[in-house]
Image 1 (cartoon, rainbow, N blue to C red):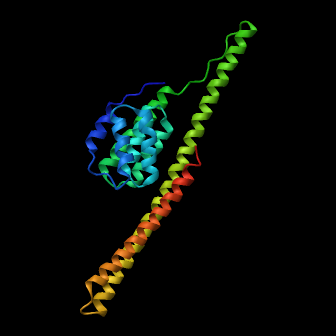
Image 2 (image 1 turned 30 degrees about the horizontal axis):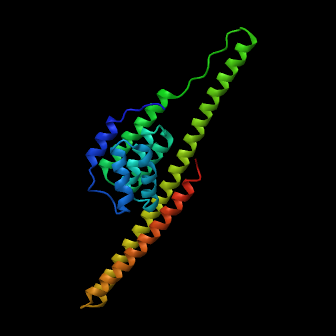
Image 3 (image 1 turned 90 degrees about the vertical axis):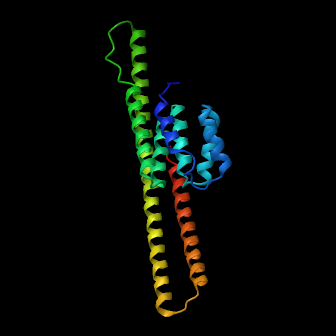
Length: 226
């Protein structure tokens, strides 16, 4: 397995800290991060995968899973997790570090991508066969990388579309809530604040469920592209 530099990832992880994590199944996320920090990437991978399955909007789960997959040499999957992390977090610092992770993946992928075999030198028939096998293997690797890149792009497009749908749902909910507050203020001089609070909770709960359904469906669709 090719060894990749991890210094940048560790620095980024330390910069983030643990306090900003979105609500998630703490055991899966915490255990996964602990395994990653202990450099037990094989153990960390399924734990972090479980964490993001339980909460697709948890940026730390996607971020550390990206680190783990990068350390395991699974570059397209690592890049995909960084892209998901960018889509579920609005924090500029998080997005900046995700971009750095994506750049590292692209840089390593470029350096390790096999080049096309040179024209074979005329020699014995057996040497010709070896050259043909080498060229075929190289071409297959390039085609595989291209296919993975296309799949990664498709997954990113699916998640981007879902994110926009979720943003629209939230905007609509805010508009409904503002209208409800305005109606209450104009119609009832002494409106019950508890009723308004209850209505606000109902709208927020409904919005949260719609967004979760949208993101879960997108996540399932994205997983069909490998």
